[in-house]
Amino acid sequence: NAGVTQTPKFQVLKTGQSMTLQCAQDMNHEYMSWYRQDPGMGLRLIHYSVGAGITDQGEVPNGYNVSRSTTEDFPLRLLSAAPSQTSVYFCASSYVTGGGYEQYFGPGTRLTVT
Amino acid sequence: AQSVTQLGSHVSVSEGALVLLRCNYSSSVPPYLFWYVQYPNQGLQLLLKYTSAATLVKGINGFEAEFKKSETSFHLTKPSAHMSDAAEYFCALSNDYKLSFGAGTTVTVRA
Image 1: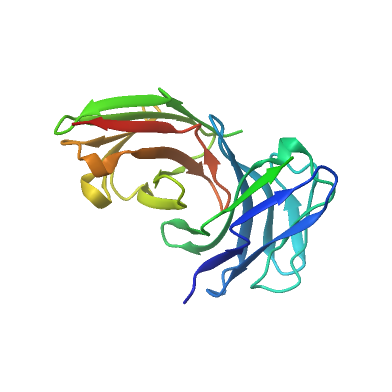
Image 2: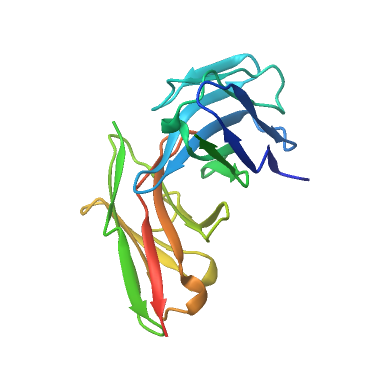
């Protein structure tokens, strides 16, 4: 299993450009999430999905769109990039166990918006 | 609403000394609690998690954490720091498949 994969690893955008961060998992996990990591703020939830065709907003959804057409893929779209979206983005997938939910994180995408 | 507070954004310890990272939580229902470690320019690695089976939880790399409901705390400890423990540590809470993270504590280890 590759686990959770994210592409690209690094990206530089100009203000106003759009792009899609890709996330895929091969573990057949039902739940997937996107987080952004900023210094001194930990990780904050952007959007999440409880299954194919079902998504919802997290703590910081503005400026981002998601869709989940398959169990495996959960892309994150930046509609019009802004410098405030400079961050490290992590995708995670999870499934329920007898002891709660088991989370698996991707390696991250480092995005710089100039 | 649920939240996590990590006390101290930076901790500096000498090699061989005790590592203590503090985490307090707020949750209206019994939570699942986690500690993650992030080495420079890497992703998140799970150190340990509390699922109500035992209040003292042992994790990888010699770390352990104790759940104290009366204090709403889940502090992380390691008896003897190693240079390889230098990293950022995150405490997190979940009641479902979403995680709420603390702001993180950066640990530096002095030789």
